[in-house]
Amino acid sequence: PFLPLFTILTYLLISISCDLNPWPPSIPIHIQSSPIAPRLHNDLSSLKTASLDYGNLVHTPPLSVLRPSSIDDLIALVRISNNCSSPFPISVRGHGHSVRGQAMAPGGVVVDISALAKGGEGVRVSRDPVLGFHYADVGGGEVWMDVLRRCTEEHGLAPVSWTDYLYLTVGGTLSNGGISGQSFLHGPQISNVLEMDVVTGKGELITCSHEMNSELFFAVLGGLGQFGIIVRARIVLEKAPTRAKWVRMIYNDFSKFTRDQEHLISIKGANYVEGSLLTDKSPPNNWRSSSFYSSSHQSKIGTLLKNNQGLLYSIELVKYYDDLTANTIDQEIEMIIENLSFVDGFIFKRDVPIMDFLARVGNLDKPEAEPAAHPWLNLFVPRWEDRMSAVTPDENIFYTLGLLHTCEPHELGYFEDQNNEIIKFCEEAGIEIKQYLPHYKSRKDWMKHFGRKWKTFEERKMKFDPRMILSRGQNIFNHVT
Ligand code: FAD
Image 1: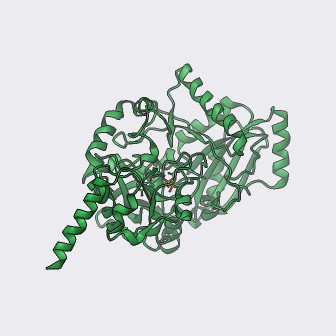
Image 2: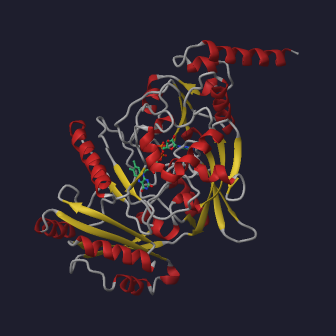
Image 3: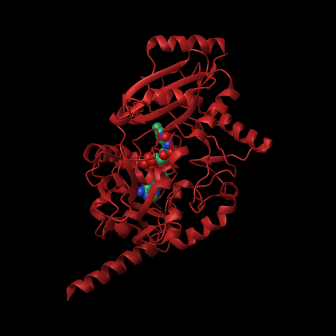
């Protein structure tokens, strides 16, 4: 007989404290008496971690950090916030590799979803009984590296679409897009998801797919964390290749460089195509794959760089192969690159196990005494499924331009000005760019970013997170101007 009374009293206490305590100082008190209280961390170290990200440009601590032990903890947290007259913000932190505080929750609770990750142990691989293809069910907090290891080592299978860097979470990249040199062939990662379990901003756990609750499914993909928390995603798999022929070609002519890139994506012979700029400030061997060139190749490229005013272009292409295709792979590569216009003698080839290629960036998460700032600007995109929240320019061929700056705090102003100048130049020249991993300060700019999709984006927010609880670090619905 005491139990229901106790439950009612607890509920009343929570509701009363929500209503009586002025917003925002005392969120943890609101939830102290709830079952998730032991998983809330208010120590300085937890709060500090939650107020940092890769960009190191925004630092806003939450009031508390939840390390959930189950999906029920997430549901409970979202419901408690909903029950407050002034709901507190909740943001999921995947691996914290945003650059502008997108995974932060000023005055609210950050969910450290890595607490639910099992280092790939929870990845379940299955085969569709009717269509015969394979897929993996993975937790939203798992990092892609663990998903890859689990799928290849135990099943000889692998997802088809990747990011260059694999220490990012499944939920984090699916909230944005997940792009790399395979996107021209398979689409971004968000195009290779079959089903998801999502905890919405109303605290409902919903399974969604193309056919089932499809509005939520498409809202969440590329949805910047606005509609729900991805707790499981079903990812398309294919037979994992075993080796990769990895080729880089250097250009000193921009038109030839872009023409060849467009040719390569149109013939679809390679498994991966990406271009990059080489400058005297960004050497041939950089953080994106530090060991590709031998020292003699580096000095050969260095000399060419000097002779070309410190600017060259590089196309990187990869063709996967295995024992069955080992005899023909060199011939296939020759056919792909015939008639390309790179500088004579400036083609470099490596033959590596597939893991060496996919994991080429390594793990960048080393503790640094003075972390650098990363004022990145990513602009772009190719044609994707229109019902997804992610927005793309309205053209057939798109380039992804990633300006991945690393700088000391005193250089920040210079790079921020440069980024703004590029955006202004595009606006004035009528180049309709879209930002990838977007960052805006005003509602007007967000509306412009989403363009014709804004109305749907806003309607979906009202439907799935009407009290605007989730992912306020993106500054979309809690803008100041
Ligand atoms: P976080 O930064 O933790 O979160 C990002 C956003 O997603 C936040 O709004 C957060 O609240 C939300 N979110 C996180 N998890 C969930 C979830 N489970 N459910 C709902 N919302 C959630 N991107 C590419 O596409 N290709 C690349 O090759 C690539 N390389 C990168 C390399 C580096 C070194 C870095 C720093 C970033 C790179 N990115 C790349 C960008 C990256 O994909 C995004 O920043 C991504 O959001 C990072 O994932 P995360 O797990 O760190 O997410």
